[in-house]
Image 1 (cartoon, rainbow, N blue to C red):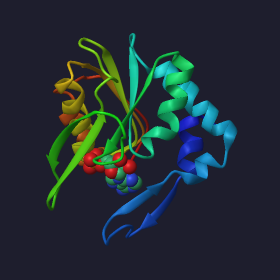
Image 2: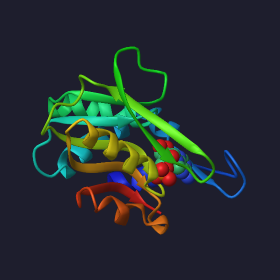
Image 3: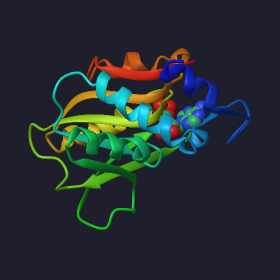
Image 4: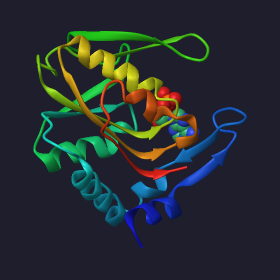
Length: 175
Ligand code: AMP
């Protein structure tokens, strides 16, 4: 079985979580399988095209495989978090949600001018979160090297929106 097939078999879909109409893709069963987890990191390493200077993971499930991926590639890991969680000096970016706004932050010393940053999260839905992370990195002078996700909800066409920043989007499983 391929890694993609094993992910499909292992992910749990929870209907109507956190609200009605959402089919929530729960990746926690993958974390209970260390062999599959390691194979997923290896798969991302294979798919990453070109050189990257750092991996940025989006809170919180983007930290799980993002940090392992950074270690495997031998590059720094950057935490992109919701406002108010990071202790040092931060740079932030506000963006619109379906209802209201959200704000994300990273430490000011995590990105230097011209660094090629690869953005990682567990799942790509509308692309709003990944775009906000991209804008935040660009504010600090970073370049977007590409994106990776375990799961892409392809029917929401988020990857098309990410093309504005980079056409290197790797998703292991698409629904
Ligand atoms: P979006 O900004 O619409 O691309 O949403 C992506 C973010 O929301 C990621 O950080 C995901 O973890 C989370 N997310 C959105 N939809 C789902 C879903 N159906 N199942 C699990 N996580 C989701």
